Image (cartoon, rainbow, N blue to C red; front, side, top):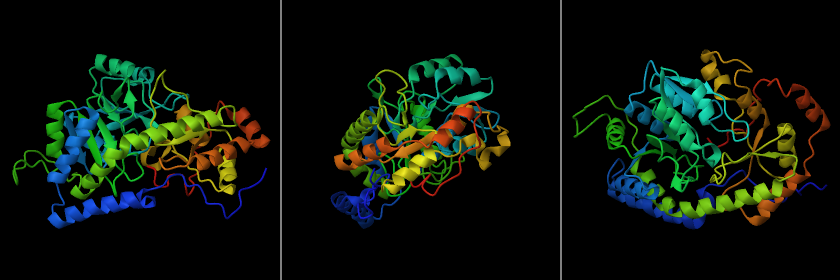
Length: 405
């Protein structure tokens, strides 16, 4: 086994827009156009982006907001979810899903996920629905799609609305239709590392419900309609015109970028079959995946990351601490072992490099490096002894959450 020479270019976890000079030049042109008009808030650029986003989703309403977190907050508020309500949220997700629930005064009901897919299922939701349940938020994690039909059936039978957290799944499809268009609302993030990313924070709410859309539009801008007539207590959660203009350019490229992500994801899955790492199962036959992240599992996760680092390949952990074990949610009282699947995943998951501009040669290096990896026997024995008893959440590392929230 030979270690990659130190002069070989390091393979990053992802690349941002500044690596594509032609794209940057086009984006700077639209930024200059906004600067020339001085229309930095609301206005034509935002309206055009919202119209084009709604068309892309084949939905009547797309409302630009300031972040993916605010998208969930505003959708919850528009549905009347607040104090006295519980909201079912997977413990295996980025903390923003739960934060949004807390920010409207409701209580996150942090539940475990399916170990094969890392996702919420109808069966898990059914176990946790109570009279206090005000909403269910399935997360299309990493770009993989939750099996929505059975979950929606469970929620509908209980009279509980559903908000899809699709912040990592732009234009992933479920049975031929984009996710985010099946529940009462779909929420999206345009954080720079997302499949559709801005040059800062941004988000959107997509919905087929005209009243919900109207309420989100009202809430995002101080409850104001018309100017200085404040109908409700709102907030400042508008999508900046600069970000809207940038996102309009990138929206036209999204299908191509997602197509390449799917190709790379399929090639990684094919190349890593029968290797020392485990692949995540599809949630159902024919499920789509737009590979915002490519995540594998291994009992020797830290050893794998060291092995990759020695070969000039970056990696990360999404996410090293389940939501219920963070300091922020210590007050919910869910101790070690309370959500065993999410806790095991936090110790075993590893994100590998994948981005649309990744070359076949870079992909081959990643596959070769992972296939060369042999878990230390001591690690295998340790996990064999403790497989039924999850350990404490893994320590954070410098690359664990690097620019991939």
